[in-house]
Length: 410
Ligand SMILES: Nc1ncnc2c1ncn2[C@@H]1O[C@H](COP(=O)(O)OP(=O)(O)OP(=O)(O)O)[C@@H](O)[C@H]1O
Ligand SMILES: [Mg+2]
Image (cartoon, rainbow, N blue to C red; front, side, top):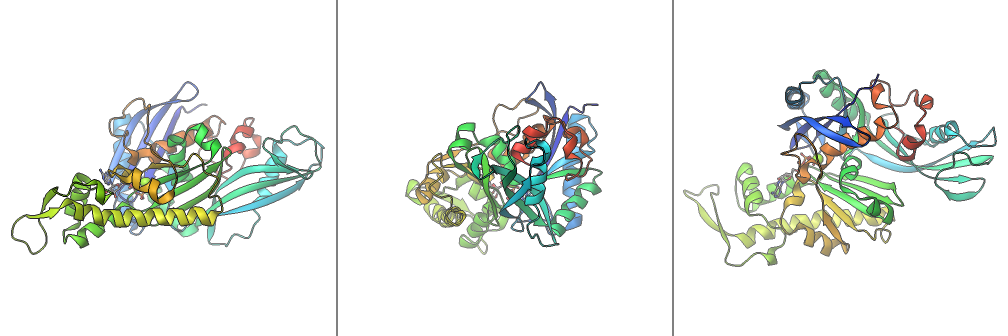
């Protein structure tokens, strides 16, 4: 019955990455198929051109099928964009038998979902945080406890239904069913966050091309998630405007000579660029380039800081920030982040990968690899073998529901 493969499709603003892995032993993955393809028709994490997006997604899937020799029928799909929102909610149930079981928890989570969610939004994740049993709060694992009334505190992530359906349609056009959508920063966190950071309190910040994805973890659980519609493409576009360069040249200059801290660049450093209206290459001070980059990157971290403050969890993040995503490759970005945020900052990327992993050691692939880990998390609960099932249905039969519910209910 068991299907020992997991598949993830990371649909980013700059690239689509499909990965196929075999589950080996209990917790390890061997990557067998990789399909990386430049994105088209996607802006700021959402689809703006169905045909173009479908084509790049189909190509990515096709490549992963070719390299793995496997046919992909269903996959976990990443989700981002400013249409994603999260709310905290409570669900209350009475305990009939006096002892709390899995069914009671599922009922409580069901009740928590009864918050007013507009009809044009879809629930993507329902994540339990903690429980209150007969007035006693802070309970982490209530199964087996005695009680008459149980309350669950849940974090609910919703997304615009039309946007989710567009994504589903694009994936389906390539013959693959999206078995579940996973919010970008939650996937990345599975790869970059250590258990200690997760427990102590830390924020994952994945700066990609079109979005900056955030997830706050405290006490081992997800407390807050957010997607900001700003990323590396904005830096490139600032460079293009500032130095009057075509976008593709600005992107190249950024990757080759970019630095996030102007004062860390030697005054004598010059680079050659070919600006609009210029006959030949002209010399530009590298500090000028760093100045443009620094302004934008600082703005991004100011937005992140604002978001942390708005969440109310500032002061609860002693482990600081774990920075990933393609834009975290910018030299100097760690120092700048630390200065703006006033937090310790660590750079992270997928590590200890096994199999076809040559390209995947970059921070740009944290979400892609994270999707596989997310799938693995569910395969432990036996759900990956029923990938075609509607995410909300039939969960109550699973024996291993306890582990699964600890983290999420799709
Ligand atoms: N060496 C580098 N220096 C600076 N920026 C870089 C470097 N390499 C990649 N980037 C930037 O990283 C971004 C792409 O990152 P990533 O692949 O994580 O994004 P994505 O997943 O496609 O997009 P998103 O998640 O935002 O939808 C691009 O803006 C690119 O310019
Ligand atoms: Mg991404």
